[in-house]
View 1 (spheres, rainbow over the protein chains, first blue to last red):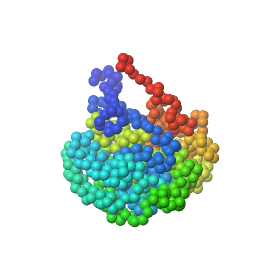
View 2 (cartoon, each protein chain N blue to C red):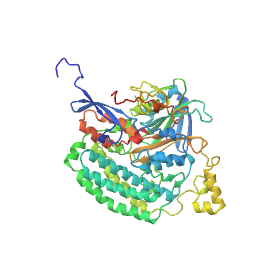
View 3 (cartoon, helix red, strand yellow):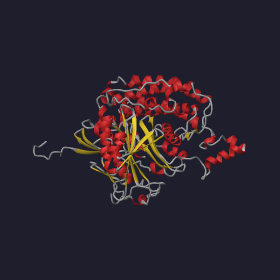
View 4 (cartoon, rainbow over the protein chains, first blue to last red):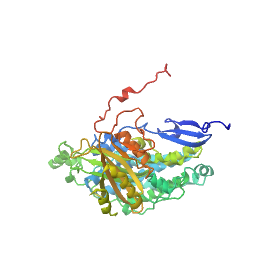
Length: 398
Length: 161
C-alpha cells in the first residue's frame, strides 16, 4: 500500500445481500473488508416485516395464535405454547395436568425441531450435506407427530386459551414413543460425522467468540448464552407447564464460540428426548381443556348439538358481547423457546383482543450481537457465525 | 426480593404487582438515573426488553406513550418492570445503551414503530421499516392497512436501469 494513500482506502465493501443461500433468510449485511477479513459489518433487516404486532391489536387471543405460529417458523408450537402461556397468565387460568404434559411434550418436540434444523443447516453451510439430510429426516417424523395431533404439519395453531384444539389418543402416544426410540441412533451418527471432524472443528472453533459478560450485556438468552457460560434456563429457573416433574440437565459450555453453540444444541437435543420419554409414559388422564364454566373454552361438539347447556356455553364464548373477562392490566411472561427467552408483553383491555401484544424476539436480539462477534474474522466465517446464531427472519422482523 | 422502599422514596416511584410481575412507574426525567441505580447497585444486569405502548385508545389513560423496560437480575433471577410515560409532541428519552449494549436495537425499534427519540443513541435510524418511511406504524392513529405507501414504492423500469 503506498505510504501516502488515505487511511482506509484499502477497505472494500461487500453486500451480503438479502437474497443469498447462506443467510438462511432475508437479511442483509454490508461488510467492510480488508482483503478477506471483516473490519465492520452493518446489518440491515426488515425485509420480512409483516406487521405482526399491529395485527395483534385486531385479532382475538385464539386467532393471534395463527400469527404467532409464523414467527419462529422452525418451532411453531413453541411459539404457540409461549403465547398462550402469557395469555393464560393474564387471565389467571390454571391448565389441566393433561394439557400441561401435552404442551410440554410438544414444546420439547419443537425444541428438537429447531435444533435439528439449526445444526443441520449450519453444517450444510460449511459443506456437510449428509448431516443436513439425516436431521431433516428426523424433522419429517416430528412433522408427522404434529400432523397427527393437530391436522397440520407446520403452522398447527394447536393451542387455545385454556387448553388445546383436540385431545390426543393412544396412537399418537405410540407414534411419539417410536420416534424417541430411533432418534438417538441418528443423533449419534451425525455426532460421529461432525463433532470430531477436523474440517468442522477448524471452521467453528474459536470463531465468533461471545464472552459471558458480553452475552449478559447484549441481552442474549437461550443456547447462545448457555454456550458462553450464562447458566440460565427458564425451564429450571422459572418452571412453567410440567417441567418441574422431569429430570433433565441444563447444558452449558464455556467456549462461547460456534463450536460450543453446536455442542450445546446437540446435547440439548438429547435432554429434550429424555424429557419427552419421561413425559410420554406419564401423561395424566382427564380433560385436556379447562372447565367450560370458565367461559374461555368451547364445549365439546356433541354437547353443543345435543344439549341446551352445551349450546348456551358455546354462544357464551363466541358471541361478541359475551366471552370472558380480561383484566385491564399489563403482563410480561416468558418461556424458554428453542432460540432463547421468548416473552410476550400483553396489555389487556376489556375485550378478547389484546390492546398491545409485544413479542420479545430472541432472533432480533441475537442478530444485534453479530456485528460485535464477527470483527476480525474472515468472510467464510460470516457464514459459520450466522448459522450458529440461529437467526430466523420471521422472528427478526415480525 | 430487592427491597424497593429506598428507591421508591428517592425517585418518587409508584409500585404495583400483578400476577408475578413487579412494576414500578417513574417519571421520564428520572428513568436513566433509576435504571443506572438498578443495574449498578441492585444487580439487574440483564435488560430483557424495551417496548412501548400507545395509550391513545386505552380506557383510563393519562399519557400517550408508555415505555417499558423489563429487567432481570441474573444472580437472583428476580425480574422488574420499569415503566415511564412520555407524550406528544416530540416524545424523547435518554438512551440506555451506555448501560446495556442490548438496548441498541430495541431502542431503534421503538423509534421506528412509535417515533420516540432516544437522545444519545449512536445510530438512531429505522430498523424494520424502509428508511424513507415517514409514519410510525404501531401508533394507534396509523391504520392497519397503511396509508397507501405500498403503491408508492419507486419502480425502476427496464429502460431506466
